[in-house]
Length: 289
Image 1: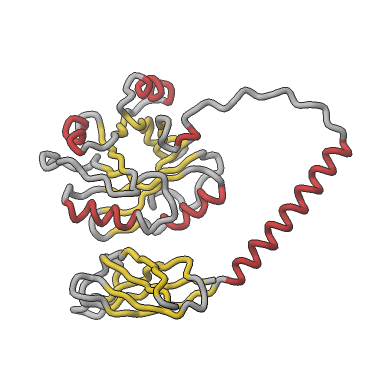
Image 2: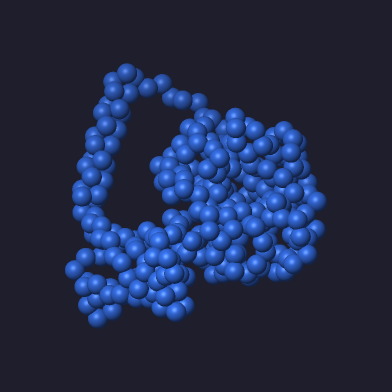
């Protein structure tokens, strides 16, 4: 079962879900505090995942911010723009598809004619049961999915088309008859599995021990850009923003989420960023191995 989750739901994903669409951001300032944790949970569970941005306007600035934040996350399948609570939809125009970012839209049935001007694949809220949702989606191949309930064990639930959380869209292959396996063979298989798991755990522990974290505080330019370089003594594997500082008050805040790029340069690694608060201080954490 594909679920839709936000900070209104528990942080821990239910073990029965087979896919998840996670609220990422809202408006120009809000970030779901569970988004990183739930992406990691989905990866651990081996289920596909996507994220969505809850729109408070159809401004280019807000959509660009949502896309910029999406690109800092660890591989969601798509970003869904949620139009469902907007009243004035007359401003919707075609929304560009940034390279490498898969965008879709979500709305209710009354909003679909306006949201279609975005040019994005649309998922509809069609409240009802799962069977009705499946029938509706089958008869509307232009849609990417249907949200069919707002209270499936406390969650919204989804049915998606092939290509969107695609491994969930096709029926599983028929079960094959299990050959008779002796107790000795079963014990041997379990022992082999335990050995492999122990080896994998040891390898993961070794890799974790090799990771080092360093926090930096750096100034941003008039357009929220900046850069710094560090020696190529280790390999940077990730850069994550911690806080930025409001230049007028000196107070830390998290309203700006820059995009980081790491580039090898003459024996150094150049860490550059854009989208931070202009003329301020930004704190970020660098993970290296």
